[in-house]
Image 1: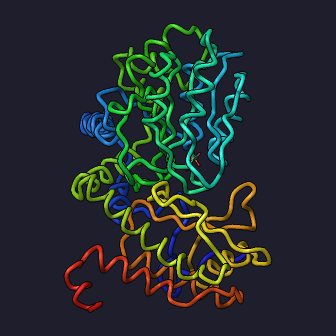
Image 2: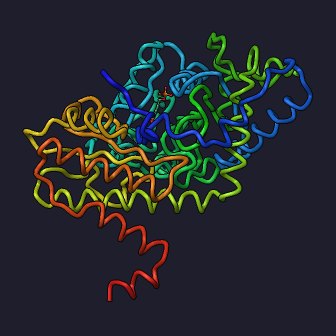
Length: 407
Ligand SMILES: *Cc1c(COP(=O)(O)O)cnc(C)c1O
């Protein structure tokens, strides 16, 4: 299997994680390792902890692990969920299922709230189940904000409202791995107890860092549980005066420098501006798929426009079309790397990631590659998707000129 052909130009990395790493971030890592307790490095680390909290929009503590997102999942569970504890998992797609499966592996009892993989979770069904739990067996709700398999974004604040409506003490844990930095997320305003994320999606940093932001209530509970845990332990990390214990060992120095640069970039652009950019790029992808799919050959997985993710788009193909063939051709012949359909969507969908360090021409280039790949594979799509994407982007960026142009 050939990957990409960098002899001819850039590979378009359109996978929904890892995402493109900016040149500035790459350059920030190009330096020698330093002493474990180098004072400049310690200051950079402290600034990253503080600024990550700004991205999570929380006054709570953020813990950083040398790990991927699965590690952040495990950290949240290991600190709070004991053997036999019941957790509620609104099923939104492969990622909610996988987080639930990990909870089960760690000894929890897992109950799912059934869902439609083309829609956001239904807060009323969650509330119903919480209300029925009179003796408060449910210890946490594991809610995925954007499920990267389905490209549906659910309403995290609605889970808090459901918990509060029935005065249920369960913790609200939110997976924001695929949404943080790409769409509004407000940990404190939304009453989230634990938010988990990773470095390699919206945050423009290479894979290898995981984050958990932890409310004071969740931190207190983690102390009270008496659960045995090692590397993931929060209290040990906060209670120690030693810098070394912030990472429970050697800090991932280069990734911290990378993260510092990426956070600088995010704040230079402005969080709100970055969210708006993601919204625009997502709208352009949706517009392209809308035109291509007029023949019935393909369609967006997320059926409700308001629930469509800003960071990734899952595109279903009609029976008889092999999405993997299309995806492999796009990568091998055109240097456009797309995500594959996950779980039940394997072979039936492909995904376009549009998160992190990405702009209009990058998305248009990738959409052009997808359109070419569809031609090559004989997909009976309607032409004009890329033009629709151009129009969408132009209308958003240059509204007056676009109106004049259309007239
Ligand atoms: C990518 C992803 C994960 C897992 O992160 P890894 O770094 O691959 O372990 C978890 N949840 C969501 C929503 C994701 O998109």
